Amino acid sequence: APARRAATPPPDTVAGPPLSPRRAFVYSALLPGFGQAKLQRYNAGALFVAVEMASIAMAAKSRTDLRQAERLYRDSIVVGYAPPDTAGVIVPRFQQCRTAADGATPCPVTQARVRARRVHYEDWLAAVLFNHLFAGADAFVAAQLWDLPTQVSASPDGRGVTVAARIAF
Image: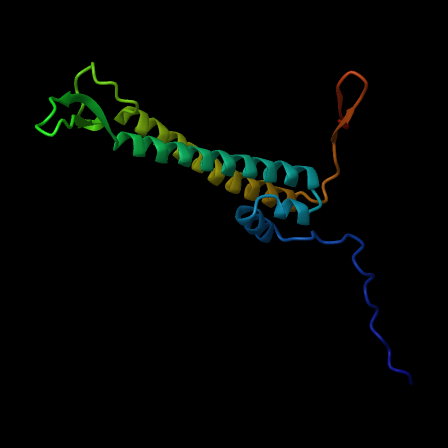
């Protein structure tokens, strides 16, 4: 008698997500937009990449401003001249900006300006970090809900954007 084969169940017709939620989080937390691209959410990925590039560019500019403020703060300025010596050389008198306490000395950069530049730089670094974490969280949620049907749509029309939502009663 021929051997009886066990009936094999039909293959699952619902495909699994392209990434596990954990892997999607890691991908996007390390490289914002990458997890979204793997999940075929190209617009969301492009948004995270754009925010990342803008934040890095502004952090670099803020770092340049901070370095310039620190350099100018350590600089010295001419506050007067000594009478000429016997050889006829006029000797300028310098004063460090950070020690200039009188209001008459024009100091281009104060300690408050250096602190403000440092805070501005740190804010842009925080924006970069936030973008990484938010992109990771977005990819994690997108991987969890990858097969959920779209209930809300937006489409451009002649005067703006039309937003439509489908609600079942």
